[in-house]
Every structure is written in C-alpha cells, then in structure tokens.
Length: 274
Image (tube, rainbow, N blue to C red; front, side, top):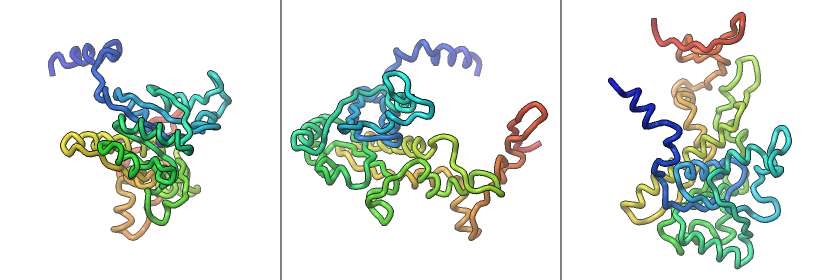
C-alpha cells in the first residue's frame, strides 16, 4: 500500500475532473419525464457524460420547476429542479399533434435511450411508446419508469410519488418508533433509489446491445425498487409469518448500533464485537 495515498491524491484531485474521459460520451438520451423519478434517472446518465435532451410538455413543463419549500430562486425556479436537471439540453415539444410526434420519432431514431415516467401506457397511447420507437430504431433502450410497472392490477391509471412508494413497499412501516405511526424518510428516497436502479438497468441494456445489436424495454417499478432496499424485512415476513417491527434509532439485528442522546448532543455508535 506504500504510495497509494499519494497516488489517490494525485489521480483523484478535483482539479483533474474536467479532463477525465466520460464513460457515456456519444450516448444520446431523450427524457420525457417530470418530478423526480424520471429526471433523476437521466441526470445520473448525464453525469457520466451522456447527452441528455429533456423534452418538456407544453403549458406547465416539468412540474418540479414549482416545487420549493421556501419560495423560488433564480428565474423563479425551484432549487429541487436545478439539482435534478444538470447536464441537460432543454426543449419544449407537444407530442399530441402529428408534427410533434414526427419530430420526436426523428429524435428517437438518432438516440440511444429514452427515459419516461408518465403513467403506464401513456406514451404508447400517444403513439410514441416503445413499440412505435422500435420500428424507427431497433437499437433504442427504452426505460419506462412508473410506480407499479406497465401491467398488473396496480398499474392502470395510477400515479406514484415518493411517499406512495415508501408506503406500498413497506419502507414506512419499519421506519419510526414502536409507539408511533409509520413514518416516511426525510428526503425523496423512493424517487432517488428507483432512479438509480433505472439508470443501472439502462447501463446493463447498453452493454447487452454491444453483443446483440438490439435495444430493449426496461419496466422499472418504483415500489419494487424500494422493496429491494429493505434488507431482511420481506424474507423475515415470509419465514417468521409476522411483520418486522419499528425499532426507532436502534438496529435490532446489530446491537449496539444506533444514535444515542448524550449530555451535549448525540452520538452514532455501531460496534460489531469487542
């Protein structure tokens, strides 16, 4: 390990970041998404060097522009919107008239990835879904992000938000203290977690395309993505026949592990053994 610290300091210096090669340089992504789940997926890809073209629908655009806890800032844009939409080219396009559909289809024919998070089946109803895009571009990778997948009893007509995914997955049920109701996390964990899994799936599809020459459709359920994060919660329910209880700031599988009050503040302690 001799010299590793010096190597890391030199190779990973912030000043070196702009000159580093970008893993997804040359990959073009079309984003038709709003709020967090879809935009965060495309944002991850943009951070790896992909060219992201964000298509916003007319009249209101991305609704995240107007979500702000303490008012608006630069050009009346929410800070939450800014953090989700870096590294993107922005375009307004109405996908309903024939001219708008044709323009989008032409863009898709020279793109690698489409990311959308509209309600299940919406893009297909508009004539710009995966089946239509595949006719123009068989190599397209199409990520359909939704709350409950593109088919099944929960998919049709249902919107999904972060709180919905936290609740349906069981995340909220195990969060909080035993003598209090279920709680949601203090940030949009349901959106960002699902977006990360969607971006990872897109990378896998792009890698597979190198071998097969063909794209594919990715059906990413936000609720299912959250279930993936719940470690032993669901296996325990299946084996023990009962739900995992809320444990507050204590990890019941790894004691002592938690956040504890002290005289002058709090301390986080996690001890595996002596």
